[in-house]
Image (cartoon, rainbow over all chains, first blue to last red; front, top):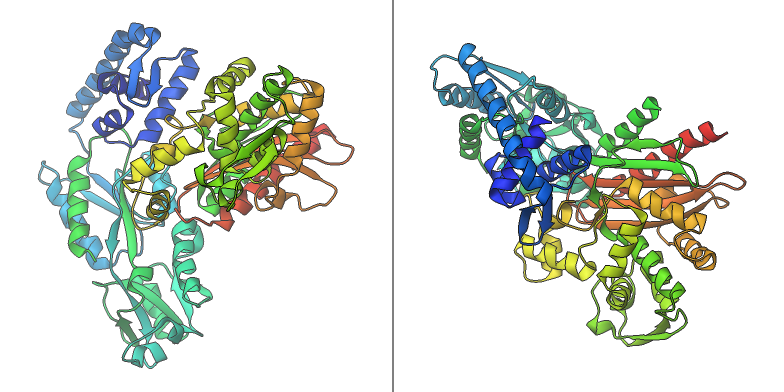
Length: 291
Length: 297
């Protein structure tokens, strides 16, 4: 209810759903759906939605002052609670297993530097995208780097960041030896990658891109680079790895199918909190890894 | 009932989409299977069912003659992937047949010709009269296309569609936000179908023709894919725009109470073709209808 009132006050102040969403660090759809729910709950239309923006109805104008009081009071409650308990108790963040150890460590360093109070602990979890998004919704995480595309729904996510990846091949395989490796040379090898249930849409995008190239590999579950390298070194699989991932014995990393295998991620933050510093720190670090 | 809701949600998760669903028997308020079925959702071409009702009322009121000849010049029409806008030469057909094209193959050109003749106010009158609180029609398909072109920063519709279909960037559009575009809810659209099946939204004869036209819909990939049985009628209307894939239909098993089911989805992927989501709509509809049949038995 308070969250929905906060949306209402923002829309009333900005007279525009998009600007209201920006001011709350969110996207538009959850704002408009939240407001719609508030209206259904109250049985009143608060805002007139037009092509030029949003204007208050008579009922909306009458209720706005009280809504403001409630929203301000709840903000005060949160800030007083934060002062009493020393603000952020540490950063809890999560990343998908496709980010290699080096990227993970760089992100931790960046998050550590981002908090003003010098030594806040940074707790890291590695999980699939769907599990990370569930943690964010439950409030178990502050921020996460997830694969794109994913069903983000009402959470707020940043732009798509692209990280180059190479194809991990068994030493001696055709594509590993070729001067110009092509998709067809991967025939007969299975794809070692995170299981589909980690995030069906991104998994399907990768598989569909390979199918488009005339490959239809069997899938061998391997989430981390450690698991991918082990599967590839065994000789029957190929995998993909970010460019800072270590090249392990029995494997070769080759630059091929660049657009198809690139890792696309988004930074998703827990709702209703000001995490701009953390988002900025992660964003800058991931852009530095970049394509 | 909670078990079927969980299973339906699992179907949407597996397909990589958000999903909203509502199902209830025709002519009854209960039992209902509801997964966000009273929340506003992007209608896409599902709104054409409401245009159909407005047209039927114009026939009943004598404002339009259902058998009158209408001349349509394809070059002047709203473009679309099916129907009259693809034709090379002008055609002449009746209002009922224009409605048939609008419903059976979601012909954008036919819909906008009908909407142009009726006016938006006639559609709003239907929404008001049936008490559809989540439903709003901002304009015809041409208006939706203008929204998409504007928001993607493109110059032409094919260019906009190409930009929006990329999985490499986020291209949002007001046309995908129920607060800004033509919107409805599962409950609202089922109220319309219910009125058509009960013969109350227009005269019984006109309602009967509307039911026949809805049953002629050609698309087999969504709700019909959940009921691939020759003796089962699936009379419905799909809607597709960008990541949005919808269908609302009445499913009728021989000798049983017909069941209305509405499924609305928004995919994480932006691809133009996503058979996994189309099939999920059929699967979710099948789960909901099967649950209701057990209750009605």
